[in-house]
Length: 287
Length: 350
Image (cartoon, rainbow over all chains, first blue to last red):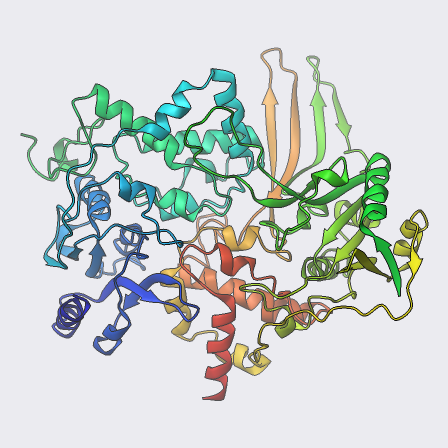
């Protein structure tokens, strides 16, 4: 599959359809990492395997802004798995990415694995093996029967007495070092100035203290309400091992169960759950 | 060679914890809630933390998730507080003097990191008074690494897994206990309370080393500033600050006045400083909004130049990096400082 994919990438670069393709490569120490392929002869670096768990869509937020004033936004080819495609759909719906500036290379997803070879928890509860959004598709999707997310992790948490829940989260969030890796890895976090990083401390100060850290994480979770594609990037990148996806999944569960099974990024409808874009903000007419 | 058996060491640490603030690597499983069927995270990260006894120490730790620099240069500290009462009268409060502290189990690389911090914070006038005060009150009891672990490269930047250069006392694990090297007067003073045995011919184990690699020359750094290589590193960088905050030698900070005003007009203003990072977008933004490091490649380049060109040029230390490898371990997108050094050294030869 990687040969056909490589041929396609080469063709895209040679024809100058795209300026660069973002995919995956293996670094010198054997770790899989994002790769930016600018030249056709670099295509051999590309890999795709069960360790390609980064959501590359986050890079589009940066690439879709001109580097210098007046400069044209370059066209980017990007590899997307089914969950990544959901985040990309959200960005398209929110007018953050111009559709004609991105060439979407969909890959059938075998399910991502942890370092020990077990299936990642998020993949064990996902049966989507083909991205909903692509310009070209590579790979053969494995046969997977439909899996319904049972939210057992969220329910365990809900079952705890309030004070235990509070103790749990204060303990976890206390470990946060405010490195913002979660935010930077998240395609849904694209603000130019994050509320937690304003120079005037309008909402939140600079202290490394629990109130600030809790405020940041809870606010981020709410900002992603109805927009989180459940790619788990936030949790995977956290250097302190904070189970951030649990915050997002609590909201995902509430939305799914109380608002007619809504999931972010599974539809081209430009109608985010809680913010209907109209007028000049809308991409298409609202149906 | 002097020797201390494990039980005597533990008893001594127990006693020490009652007299001073004892910092040691300890597991951080603080977030484990009772009764979870599927606990979402193990939460077992060894971190340098204040401990009350030897039992709390993570004796089998390798490299802690964070360095120990926060005990000399806290993530957040109050420089002073101004209290205003309802009549408008103001009073200035300075923070109280810190208690003596002993950092037990500091790795030689982290101790070497403190030498870099010392150079930056103390070498040139004015010295940082807050740092200086903590530094005076701190004694370092180091613990040799039995081997260099994944990502470790201390020997490439002048350190060693069993280096006693930057600690007051160095312990090295041997059978049934630890070999003790007392390095400084401070260490001598601290060791007065311990019962040490003199063991003839006690051999120190040789740590297992990782391969040492060649560093780029000063000229290579000078020649490479505008190299397209940095674009390639920077475009992959997510722009988070994990690398910087886990680093034992990064010392950038931001200062703000944070104010709480009550309805009656009284209030408190705290001048706080917190760790900051050259990887953040607003790090170099100046009044008016101009930003000389507006692009990701300029910011990720800065971290490497700071460690290997700016710090060695400006201060009396060989490098601003001690090879602990933490930044490599935490980087979500595998930006690897040893790979960058290798690439640059090769470019220098080309």
